[in-house]
Length: 153
Image (tube, rainbow, N blue to C red; front, side, top):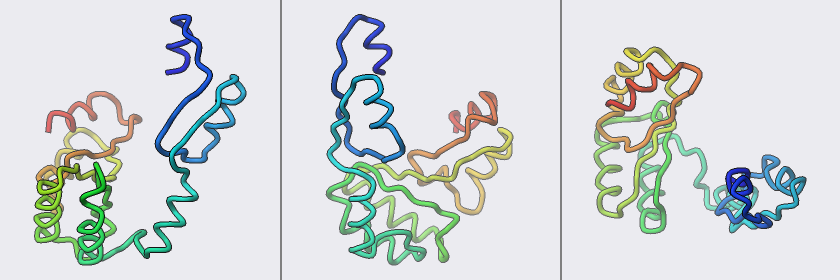
């Protein structure tokens, strides 16, 4: 974005973001004379999540309990369905109800990366991701045809 703005002869000296993921972005911006301002950084977020025992829960009841507490304050909830030890349609029904009641999106971080047809089978498979997830992640390496199949679902 900075390059696009500068190409239009706009002056960019500061960048504001919600979360500094602390993966070198601030340093890279500094090399170009830009100061990064962030509301939060990853270390702060992870410290908080560990303190409230809210990170990487594996059971649906713990996840639903956490989502019930966080729902009024978030725009998205990210899950890894394949890591939930007791995943069920009851869990997704509760999650969807909370999402509808509190107007957040459900983000399944599945990282689809297969052929188009296999991706579709996975979306419709045992976890029925297409029925409850608003957003899924995909790998670009599989190409536009495979990703297009997902987007059409």
